[in-house]
Figure 1 (cartoon, helix red, strand yellow):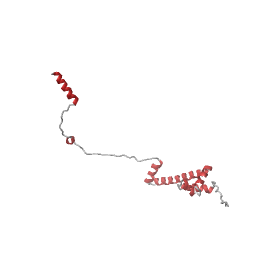
Figure 2 (cartoon, helix red, strand yellow):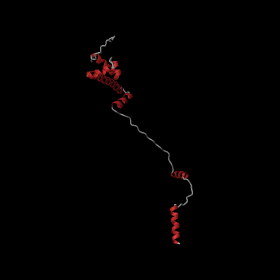
Figure 3 (tube, rainbow, N blue to C red):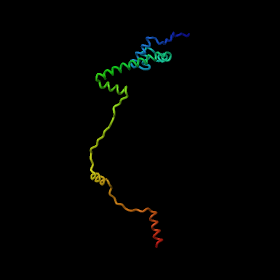
Figure 4 (cartoon, rainbow, N blue to C red):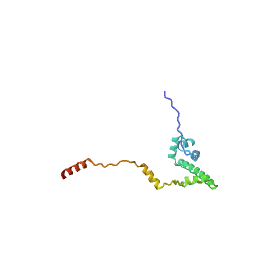
Length: 149
């Protein structure tokens, strides 16, 4: 005997309350599945809603933009009040500013020329130099002396 399981699919609509939940979750910085779950939707429902109703995707974008604007205003106020870290954060992140990185090497060790020559002489290997002739030259000199005589 087959028993039926009652199933009623949830109707996914972009209601005002649902759009507000998406906006709030995006304003907090949530993304993807976390945003969907915080807005009271299953991740698949949220993706479906965004595909079917572009207003849902707009609610997410608006939430992110408003949150970014609010944080930027706080940073700007702090920078104007004299907070140098806030000013540096604005320069680095909003204006792409980076501090110049420069490496300076200063060597003041002086070497005298006579001392350098002396050190070079100490490194030279003393050895006996002998003159060696290749084998083919020895045979050639023997032939020329035999022809001359």
